[in-house]
Length: 275
Image (cartoon, rainbow, N blue to C red; front, top):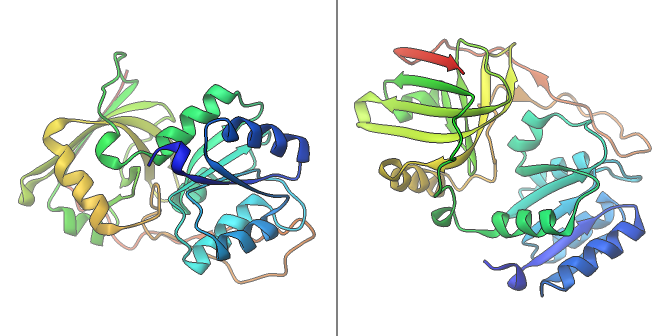
């Protein structure tokens, strides 16, 4: 989908910023809806088709984190969700699992905003086509028995923009070369990307893709489309929501509690290299 055919919902309690972003996007030809907080945004999402949701994080009544949690609970289908904020007070692991694909910092230029919007609306077949001309900071080579077995044991999970892996090494939040072979299937995922989070308690890592090699594009994208998951990078089912608690004045909800993994690595070999 092109940006000039999209409907974008902007959510921010700074009215001046809403006006600026609305003007920027309006000049690109897209339809723009606005809301001053998550509660008002949710009303729009329940009544209209929205292609891109761009939300602030800290807002009165209902904040951005609570908004995306409510979207997930209600099973609403939003093709693209992005956060833009001056604060780094979110858990990337949870946000990517809830479907957020970008965490952008204020101030944000019009050029960066439009580029992010354009990329978020692209079909998967048009993404991840160009390798980086710079060497990756680290590499990971992993051999697993099968794709189905790895997904069943939470050793590997595929989202719509990356993957979650169970590993026995620490990886830094930097660029990475991936090579994951599923021996029984005769499949190999070869990709470049970036480590978005690493959880030492569960030994899981979340990676977003920036490039897929030609020989693995077809089956990887087909697997993504088959799952029809809104999760950008899954959590491998190792987190569940804590017991409900009353929302405070800012509309915040409790963070999820970690659950230890039930099984060890399903894979046969794991090699890592940090440049």
